[in-house]
Length: 212
Length: 212
DNA sequence: GTCTATACACGGATAGAC
DNA sequence: GTCTATCCGTGTATAGAC
Image (tube, rainbow over all chains, first blue to last red; front, side, top):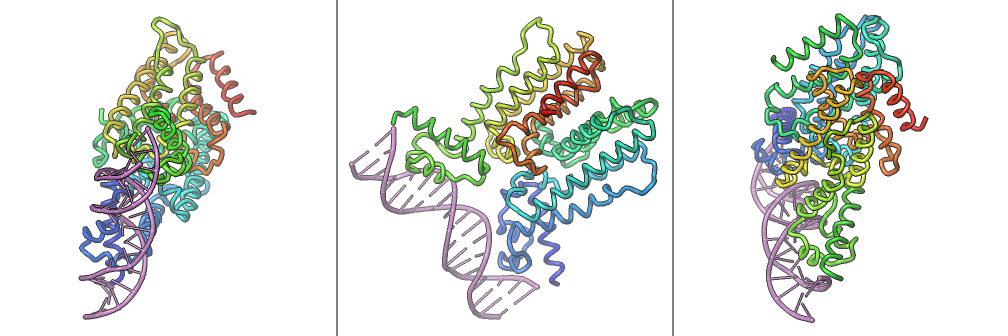
């Protein structure tokens, strides 16, 4: 098998196992067995286990990158917000082990720490800009300080919806039910600041998301 | 040393080490060394490492218990809310390893899982009751469904403020600055639903909390 | 690039003396 | 109740043949 293929195979296998069992409960031996290669071969392609997790985090970064791009001069509507939320949550779902074991990975892997810090700052900045735009458009009624607090609360809810669902005993993390409910919950953070008709619009949206 | 004392010593030592290094990075050997006892002695007092973590979780439960008690017939003010928040966050801070490594502990230790499920449900119920009371008192302007969503968002923010602070690169988890900022943030979730003069009151409160 | 074999360290946990 | 000694399993990572 070509150099590239085996590397990709290990990454795909690792992702599946990490998501299923948690990163801490997956050994390099298990990855090798599941990928049907030898342990030695795995270490030919990756320096160590952290290296695999780090590479997967980089892949995740590529997936969320589009949700951070703000078109210059575009007027952002409420739809913008939930579309981005939905896209981010889908990406997170595919890499859910990252968010389940975030603190541990964060403290153990230096490069992941740096990358995550950067991502969170950019996500926060994006949220603040979006909120600011909505205010300028007269859609949202919020002062600057409260807008920043709202962004922080949104970022927290966005970062931890996966472990929260797990810990609340929600079984269906694989299917889309938890994702929808979580997006709906974040939308409810914005709701009280919206004017009509956008408030009703988001309310209806959140309801649809919950499948009612 | 008496049976009771050594057991307590191990618990205190474990708590300090878990908080400092993360539960996953603390071995039973290290605990024994730090407590200045033998590894064998440690296993005389505890079946295994999970047993120590579980016992610490039970201690945490005792600390938060008072924040879950609702006096029958009492009219709950906004002060009630932030007082409870403050008390819970202080208790969490003392047992912060629990919340840093929550998902891992949750999936590994069956009894902890059961206890945590119960706690979260009770916390959620308490929040819903408090919100409901504020609505009845005319202090809060929110329909029932939005009230439940608010409670969920509050519970999420309450459960994950510690890893969120860590991951945002906030160094001062030991001192009270992060705690205050986090309480302030949760108060901001309630803020948009409050009427005057309570809104201004909470706003001022949140400001004081941030030390401005 | 991939394999087999294995070194090496570590952590959980127990046995048995005191 | 506490110690010392140690077993055992597991996981990371490497050496060296193919």
